[in-house]
Image 1 (cartoon, helix red, strand yellow):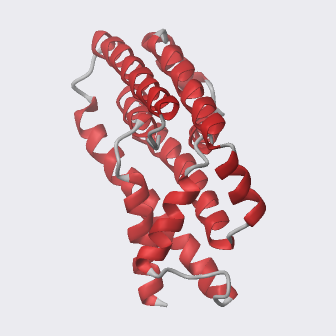
Image 2: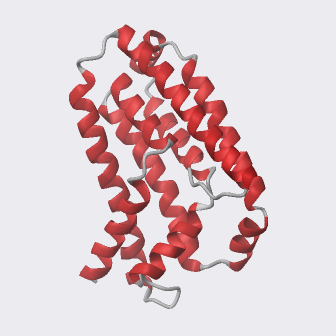
Length: 212
């Protein structure tokens, strides 16, 4: 059981560490709104990743075959969504966002859902989990129910641990940002997310696989 927990945490870390649009978004939210806003977004991303880990573990043939057959369309759709979100962040007003975050009690929940659905827009993560599960010989659909629950929770714990560390580091530098700094951060973040998504889109059309 202990080995399953360690493997699950490691897999959760491995899938979260690569710097992509979601990571940039979470860092941006931490710097602009505070650590809890960023960490809540990170939990949304971790929840989405865990959902795909569960699907990969169950090995639902209908889901896997659908994703495999429509891989190009899914990649294009996911990249397009990220590009639009990058544009949205680029034109955000940090002063209004700060005031909005003070007045809206539901902002944490909204940011959790935003990160969840943005991460969910990249279902090709299933294949990454399939590869990692095989590499680590981690669980199987025949494993005991309790072991599966512990393993999947460990994956979530690993992903959540990564976002906890990232938001902790980002929050240390947060005090150095004034309104102008946050304005520049929004522009840079939006532009970077747009570029990464555009590269992913071009790579998909060109026949190369590039995970968001």
